[in-house]
Length: 339
Ligand code: NAD
Ligand code: AKB
Image 1 (cartoon, rainbow, N blue to C red):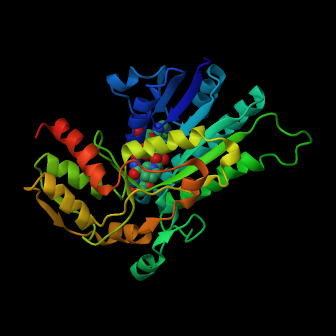
Image 2 (image 1 turned 135 degrees about the vertical axis):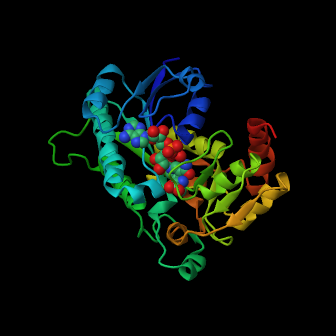
Image 3 (image 1 turned 120 degrees about the vertical axis):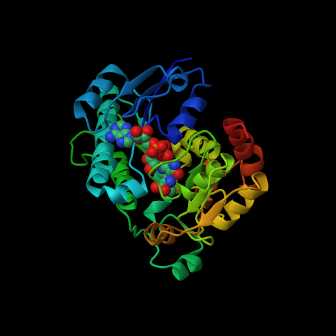
């Protein structure tokens, strides 16, 4: 079987961790991992090659492109929403210029090799922007074309990069005399907040969900920075990774869109605490809303309509809220912290 070469940028992060684990089980795949941060030994051992470097380093990206023919690129490297709001210029550089560097590399490879290169892009519910809580409640499950009025640098970067990727896939150099021999097959997923048992998030705004659980499991106090009734969609990490792999493998003929919502469950912060307390009755969690971070969460939808993903490529999460806790999060987190 011919080997597929898969590039993962941002490979040392939370999704990268889960994705490398899953890809390592596929014997026909070799992973080239790129991240600013070093990768822990056990993860690095699962990769064909690990490169420490910056997606803004155009020479490095050129070198990687000269050394490998990529079949699939999972472009995960980014600054998340809270960090992006604190450093908006850096966020724009990494999230937009970095993505542009990777798209340029992908289109160069596709044209040179005369075949499509699949480009997977993890977008976010942050592309949505509701003006206030009553509107958010009234909107309910938003579909892909609604409320595309993000209120953060991160959400704005994500929405623009969805458009940029679509341009590279469908209209890049549309005035050229000859049609291209290969294209960038850009595919995006608007992820909800992801909750992993193996890693703890940093720099995001949906972090209160996983932080609450990981702190309770360690017997540490946690002050939740949103209100008890704050509600956004969340998902267990294995489902997030599975979605990336499933969409990457879907036949292009089945896809009616380039960017899809996916949903799993949409608990309030209070409901996450209730489940956390069932497992860790001594959990010391208080609600101390930070008005500004709460404002970001209030701008994100309560839930998403993911009918297109279900119809086109068979999206269906393995974990609902109860099962995510009972069968994935609690056993793995309890093992991790030895409580
Ligand atoms: P993460 O913060 O855990 O990982 C991001 C990784 O990118 C980090 O390891 C970081 O070192 C790396 N990185 C940052 N700047 C870089 C640069 N200039 N060059 C190379 N590497 C760089 O984030 P994650 O949760 O793994 O998210 C991965 C992707 O998924 C991001 O694009 C994020 O926006 C998106 N996403 C995540 C969630 C979530 O809840 N985790 C939800 C929606 C979308
Ligand atoms: C964040 O909070 O920034 C991310 C996301 C929902 O995109 N987890």
